Structure formats: C-alpha cells, structure tokens
Amino acid sequence: SQQGEEDPQALSIQEGENATMNCSYKTSINNLQWYRQNSGRGLVHLILIRSNEREKHSGRLRVTLDTSKKSSSLLITASRAADTASYFCALNSGNTPLVFGKGTRLSVIA
Amino acid sequence: SQTIHQWPATLVQPVGSPLSLECTVEGTSNPNLYWYRQAAGRGLQLLFYSVGIGQISSEVPQNLSASRPQDRQFILSSKKLLLSDSGFYLCAWSRNQETQYFGPGTRLLVL
Image (cartoon, one colour):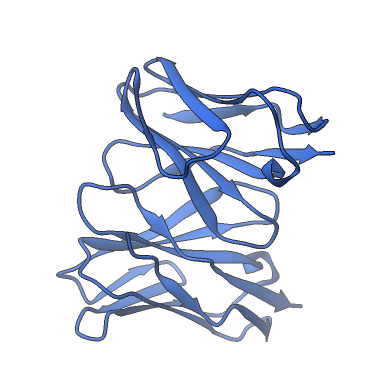
C-alpha cells in the first residue's frame, strides 16, 4: 500500500507566522486525512478531505487537495507556540487501513 | 462519548521477557482496532488490525502477536522481547476504514 510523503521533514517558524506542510502520494485515494501528535502522545485527527473536494477549513487550519498532482497541503495560519507538534498525512485508498506518512515536525518559536 | 485506554503507560522489560499490552475502547460497539509502533522521531508502522472478535490481520511478520478476545479489547503480545521491539506503541479505533482515534500510547524500553 502506498505511503504519503510529507515535506518538509522539519519546519521552524516564529509565532504569528503561517506554517505550510505538504503531502504527496502516488496512486488514487478515497480521502486524505491530517493528524497531529504532540510529543509522547497519541495522534489527534485534524481534518479529512475527500477526493472530490478541493479545500476544507477548520478554525486556523486550511487543507487543499489536488488530485491531478496527487498532493495535499496543510496550512496553519497565525501559528502559536502550542501548535508545536508533528503533523502526519494519512491516505485512505479503499477498504484497507489508513497509511500514515513519516510526518513533519513543526516548531513554533515564541 | 467514546474513549480509548492503553496500559501500561511506560514499561521497561529485559530482553527475552514476555509482553502484554492492553487496549480497550468504551462507548462504541464493533470498532475496527489497530496496533501501531512508532520509533523515536519516526512515522507509524501498522502492526495489526482487527475488524471483529477473533479476526486479526498482520501487516508485519515478527515476534509480536495480537488477539481480540472481546469486542472492545485488543491485546498485543510477545513471548520473547527483542531489543528492536523498543518503541512507542499506539492503539487506535475507527468505525470504518476512515478516521482513527488514538489512545495515549505505551512507551516500551527493552534492555
């Protein structure tokens, strides 16, 4: 099964700046999901975008999906120190378990 | 509301010892259940998943095994731990193959 590849692997920004993370994949998907993991904790689901959707918003989060380029981006606007975490994309390609990428480690410096 | 529990939170075990990690879900019935392992600073590796009692699918052949003795209970076991079994073990559940909800994890150190 395919795995999403996040880019960059690590990102460091100042508080108040926007953070953008990308996820690329190789074959068709039903939906793509983004999760967040604080250090030493379990993952928390952030947002799900279906293959027929192009953009979704949730609070300060904005997710886009370009199925022609097989890529998605997660934008966090007006970042806060509390946004410091690892962010993972996960692919749903059918009636099989989600496949998680290796994640992007975001550091927001106050 | 649904909750997922894992225990223990932390475990230090000698090489060659057995392992039993438990995961239970409350507030839902017939969930899909998953065991993942995460090495330090790395992504998630799916180990096992189950769509029903007694049904276990193994993604990675190794010295670990899983069992689902009850609808909302998922157990990860080993007869003899290896150094390479060290890591962060996460249990998750889902209603279907979509959104997954994760437990707090168990940190295992094999010495």
